[in-house]
Structure formats: C-alpha cells, structure tokens
Amino acid sequence: MMERAEAAEESVAGIPLYREGSSDEESGRRLEEDRAGFLVRAYRSAGPIFQTRMGDRSWIVLAGAEANDLVWKRTELWDYPHVFPAFGEQMGPDHLNVLEGDAHRHKRAMLKPAFDQGPAMRFLPGFNVCCRAALERAQDKGAVEMVEFWAETIAWANTQTVSRVDLPDGELKRLVRWEREMLAGIFLGEGRHAHYARPEYQALHGEAMALMGKIVDERLAHPDRHNDNFSAVLRARSAQPGGLPARESLIDDLYYILVAGVENTARLITWAALYSWLSPGWLERLRSELNDWDGADVAALAEMTGLKAVILETQRLRPPAFFLPRHSARDFEFAGYRIPAGASILSANTLCHFLEEYFEDPFAYRPERFMDGGRFAPRVNGFFGGGVHICLGRNYTLLQTPVALARMLKQCDLEFLDEAALREMIAHPKRQIPPEVRVRIKAGPR
Image 1 (cartoon, helix red, strand yellow):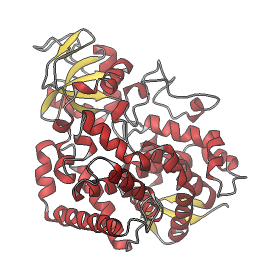
Image 2 (cartoon, rainbow, N blue to C red; image 1 turned 60 degrees about the vertical axis):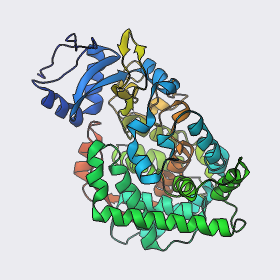
Image 3 (spheres, one colour; image 1 turned 135 degrees about the vertical axis):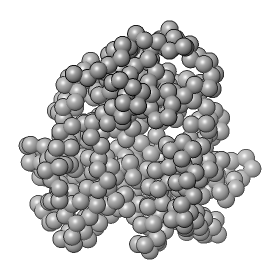
C-alpha cells in the first residue's frame, strides 16, 4: 500500500501540501514515474490547488477544469518571459513564448497568414504527396526510428509546401536535430546553460541560424519567387507600420513555419500508429474504413469516424505534457487561497483527460468514446493549451496527423522491432515513449 502524507497537512501559505511516500525526494520520484496517476490522486485528496515537490523546489499546482479556465483566460497573471527564458536566449526577444500582452497579440497577428486553418488546409494535399513519397522511400530499407522519421518527413514536406526551399538531406536532418536539442533544454532551469554550451549543440545552433538566415535573405532579395505561407507572413510584416522588423525576428518567423513543432506532431503520429497496430481489432477496423479512400482526397479523411476517434483518444492518453510551469506576475486568488506574486506554479493542463467525471475508465484506451458524437468537454482538452496562448501550430497537427496515419494504414505494414515491450508500454499510460521506437516500414495494402 502506498504511503501518503495527509492532504490536510498545510504549508506556511495555508495551501494544502500533498506528498506520497516518506520524503519529498520519494514523492518527487513518484510524480516523475507516474505523472497522470499522481496528479489524479493529489486532486482527489487535496482539491484543485495544492503544493508538492518536484525537482529542486516546491510548486503550487492548479488542477481541474476551473484551473484551466483561470490559467488560459487570465493571461495578465503570468510572467511568460520568466517561465521560458531559454526561448528568448536561443531565438531572440521576439519569440512568441517570451512575449505577452500587446506584443504577443501582434506577433500572432503577423503569423496568422501561415497558421490559420485556411493556410494550413491549402497545402494539405501537398503534405499528403510528401508522406506517400517518404513512406515509399523507406519501404524495405531497414529499420528507422519512428519519431525521427516523421519529424524529418514533416520538415521536408514544409520545404515543399508552406515554405519552399531546396535543402540537401543532411542540412534538413541537422535542422530537425537542432530543434529537438533546443527543446530538450527548455525545462532544465539553470541547467539549460550547460546543455546549450555543449560544442555539439553550439555547432547545430550556428548551422540552423545561418541556414534560416540565408533563406530569409533570399526571400527578401526575391520576394515574388514563391507564393507560400512564408511569403504571406513577409507581406503582412511589410504592411505593418514601420515595415519589416529586424532580420532576427524574420528568422524566428521562419522557424515557426519551417520546423517548429515537428517533434511534437511526430510523437503524436507515432503514438497513434502504435495504438493502431498494437491494439486488438483496431488495425483491421481502420483499414476497413479506409478501404475505399482514393489516397488523394484529404478532405474525405474528416468523415472517417474511426480514424478521428483513434487520434482523439491518443491525444487524450498521450499529451506532450501533463503540466506546464507558470510564474505569477501578481497576487491572485483561486479556490479560496491567495497565491502571491513570484510563486512557482504548475498548471495541470491535462489532468481532466484522466478524470472519470469526464471520461469513463479514463486510463483505458477506448477510441469508441469519441465516436457517435463523443468529444472533449470545454476546458478539458489541454493537449494544445488554451486561451490566447494556445499552441500556434494546432491546426497543422490536427490536419497532418490523420493524413500521416491514413497513409501508413493505406500503403504500409509496420514491423516494430521491440513489439513486446511496446505492447507493455501502451498498456500503461504512465509510461512515456521510449528514446527510440524502431520500426521496419514494409509495403502493405493499397
């Protein structure tokens, strides 16, 4: 039986303290090992606000639908530059994740021509063609690492569609690798400095900035050469008072369009593929649904209820984060408690995914819950966050994932090299995706 400190135990601030085990260190380990389960137990025991230990400090955790509503709507409460300084250090002061208020709204308005649903839909047929070609090239060519394969495929598709540029394969792979390494340092706190100081990372960062800078310079020299989403953003930038911003800001704009988010979308595609191939009955069910799909009409995928349900259930069970840090910019109240300015806060944005009041048997994989009109309730889906700071690339992830999954189901068979371990992993939501998902891509049904 798990030992648990009484939730009624209170800290100096009066906010309930939740701890599992006999020490803060043991409690922190249990949180790291089973984030969803720990947060559910804490919420049931302590309520929508509690303190707990993670890493080298104590955090105030805001949990549940009401907490999501507060965090997503009350943006004036949060000091965004304090939470994600690494983005500013690596990408410059105009990066979205270090902007707030009017500056944040302006940046999103400038990027709107690339990230609204219309611009995302415009190039979806081209993305489909790129997926088909990448899968055909990989067939019977030995094992690939699946997250890496899809991250590189998405980035390559971006160079053929939303931001046209001819990149040698080696440069593209290193650009994707840089983005992965950059994101790996975001949540390291002060440890990020050592991470980013590594010579290997410094070389990747320098190459990425030089490559994107060269693309920006070529676009400015030949503004009418391409009619893609990056060109649309440059036109929006040119039309603003004062004209184009500094080159550094344009490089950051290109980063969002060309490579940002490819890792998270690749992980969602990988999880969806794992569930589709390794969950009893679902592979046959999905292939039957796709049997009459011509492989070209991407709009038709919106009517595939099984495909949609699998992706929604995958989002629910495998979000990219179980909580996100926040730093309070001012005093505020929540659930009867006063939270002071300068507090370290965790927003348990995806806790509701695992609460039975929203989803029956929440730790079970049951895509059928999203069929026949099933959906996420308001304030419950934390996969992309919410409010004005909702994930910029949401439309692309939601559109690209069903295309990528449908293409695999339609034209491939997947042979997972460590299938027994992967089956065990998908049976336990607390287990995160391993460092490598090795798979052989083989020709399959058409």
